[in-house]
Image (cartoon, rainbow, N blue to C red):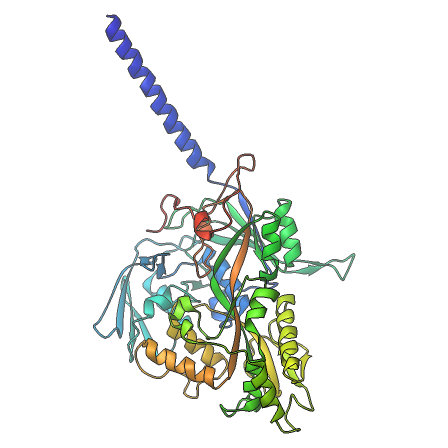
Length: 515
């Protein structure tokens, strides 16, 4: 009898323990939900309309990060290089990759509770994909056809501005994503102090009915136009959980114990010549400027080893062949070329004007370094007032320092967009009908040899994170994936490793997350 009682008591004890463990797990899961993530960004203006983004612009890159809160894509790419279903459950193509069919996920709803249709998907893709692709919709599928093979279509659809949205009668856009826009307030001037400007902000709230499962966060508060040092201060005092860190401030942030995440190099800083002085490939002025540029010092000293010297137009992670290019720094040869220039040449008796197309202190420092390098080769370079960024080539008889953000996961599409933006190709499209890395390499080699564009450095994106931000699972190419983020209580939050971005990428996903 005593033996039976002992077993009965043991069973009760085990049941109580299991029940307690279950309650703890449930409590831990519930603790992940709720809270507001406060984000600070450098950009003063963003657009959530993918049709308005300027290719390669930094403002477009910021807009894309925020748009991913509201919209979904047809397919996505994971960190292992595998394409995953998003709004499309499955896809197929013909042997030549000229015809693609995507079967859509049923029952997906926009944030206003209306159903997503194949016509919505087709209309959105027509607004962002090249006009050479014919797009049609059937009952539950979308078909894309092209006269030339497009084997890189999945790379295109998983990146850039190819989000799926619906345009409302009042011109606002609806999405099916994990959040919806609750409030958007533009920057305003203070009535008391007209010189003081209250920055713009956007508030996103969780979309309870999203097909992919409710995000952990209740809302995301984004403040725009915040200077770098102010962002760092607000992170330290707890007013922000996510901030952008300029490359020249990354070392300072780490020295102060901040948690820092970095992407692959996703932004190129480069020089381009105006058409007036960009004619022959053997132009000695452009060759002299190119040989005077000390890219290694720019990356290692000016940017404190938080950038990489660039010799190619596309980064290694995107093209796979960037290592084949080499940028020479030969000051003696630059001086020799300078000595052979006629007195009427710009850069000799009259200064070669250097325009700053991308605003910001960092890019101004880069432009000043270019001018110093040129003077070491006896070339006269003078910084000129900033021009309209990303406005395309302007015949002003000078050089332009600009930043180009790599937005597509297709090397061909990225190169084509870059060449079109700066009118580097006469025909408009890349030669050939297939995605051929050899063709891309030969084209890039020609553009580099002609010195139409002189790459300087490539920069990663740096993000400062508060210790209570969990499951920061951003991609190497810069997608933030804020739907997966959750906030831990400040009382129990502990700092996470800052040395390796992969250590900070937790694998836990919220219930109902995308496969």
